[in-house]
Length: 136
Image 1 (cartoon, rainbow, N blue to C red):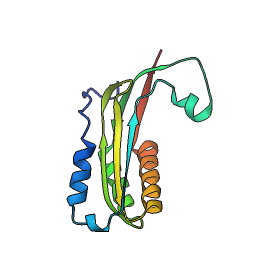
Image 2 (cartoon, helix red, strand yellow):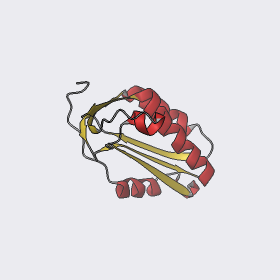
Image 3 (cartoon, helix red, strand yellow):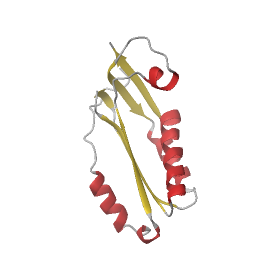
């Protein structure tokens, strides 16, 4: 087991948006995007590489490196037109349907916000987290 911690309660996206729209950069923002990653039954190898070994996911052990996440957030703020970034990551033993992560990006125009969301989620998934699928 990579983490003995219990999973955390998921945040309220309504509250996140309320806070973002009340922030000092709110009048510069024309768009917000939210990513919500969820534990799915289909193994990553099948979804990403088409490898089907007949197994199904029954849960996941999830952990993250907070310093790396903070660095990824800082890089995202350096992108054109990005004024708001918020990330929440779960941890511990997760079940099917549990939230893995939420990412909120606010910025000036759609292309900037879409690019920033893709950049940050990819950075988190590839450099900041450990996901171990529990299969049956």
